[in-house]
Image (tube, rainbow, N blue to C red; front, side, top):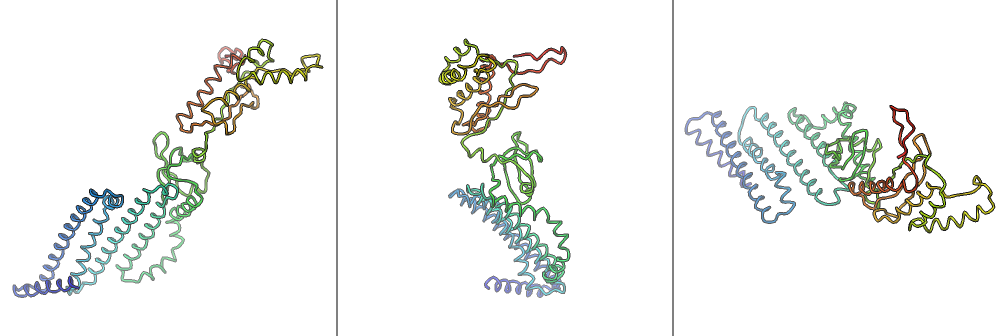
Length: 413
C-alpha cells in the first residue's frame, strides 16, 4: 500500500509538472513510461547484483550444498526478473490509454514467462540437491522433474494463448480435446518415458552407476543419467550411448549389478584338448602323479577302488583304469580350490563338454573373488596360463587346425 501511495504521488507530480511546461498528454505518458522503464531496469540490475554478492558471501561463510546450488542455478537472479513486469503493472495502473489493454496483455505474458523460468529453476535446484544424497542412485527423480516441466510448459502455452486472445483457458482446453489423438502423437515419447520411468524405479531395474549391456543400442558401460526421454550410458571405450527410456522396459538388457553385489564374478572358459593325446595312465605316470599334494589322496583312493573292481577282469577291455584327462580334471579342480583368488563357497568345477571337430572342450567354471574388471581378467588369465603350461605334464595337447597350405595333420602342441 505504501509503494502504491508513493507511486501515485510520484506520477501525480510528474503530471502536474508536464502540464506546467505545456506537454501534451501523449508526451506526458511517454515520459512516465521512460521513467518507469529506466527505474525498473536500474532496480533490477541493483537487486540482481546485490543478491548475487550476498549469496556469494553466504557461500564463502557456510559452504553449504543448498547455498552453492542456489548460486549455480541462478535462482535469485531469476527472482529479480519479476521486478520489471511488476513495475510495468504499476505504470499501467496510472496511465489512461486507448490501447492500454493490449499492453496489459503483453505484460501478463511477460509475467507468465518469468514465473515459468523461476519454477523450472526451482525444480532444477530441488533435483540437484536430491542428487547429492545416496538414495538418488536407487530412486532418481530426473524424469519426474522433466515431466513436471512439460506440464508447466503446456500450461504456459495455453495461458499465453488465452491471454493474447482474451479467451478463457477452459475454451482452449475444450478445443484441444478434439486434438487429443494428435497430442498423444506429439507427446508419445514423454508418455512412454514417464510410464517406463515409473516401472524402472518401482521395480528397481536400473540405477545411476549400474553397469548395463544392451547390444542393440551399442551400450555396454555405466549409467550416467536417467531422465524422461533417455538413459545415458558411458561405454567402456568412453563413448556415450543414448537409449530411449521405454526401450529398457519393452526390450531386454543385461544389468551386471547382481554380479557386482555378489561375492564373485563368474569365469566360464574352455580349452580344446586333442583327443589323440587322451590315454590310460601307465604305472610310471600313476607313481608320478601320486607325488602331487593335489592328487595323492585321490589316486590312493581310486587305486584301492579300481583294484576291487578289476580283480576278476582278464582283459584290458573290461578293466577300469585312470586316464590322463580324468586326472587332469581332478587336478585342476583341486588347484582351483587352493587358489586364494577363487571363491570356493560358490559353484566351481572342471567339466567336459560335447566333443567336436575341434577336440574335447575342457571347461573351467568358477567364480573369481575379485570382481573389478582388470583384476578379474588377471585371475582368469593366470588360470589358463597355468593350464597351458601344465598340460604336457599330463601328456595332453591342445588341438590346432592343420596348416591350410600343406594339408598336414593337426599339429599337437
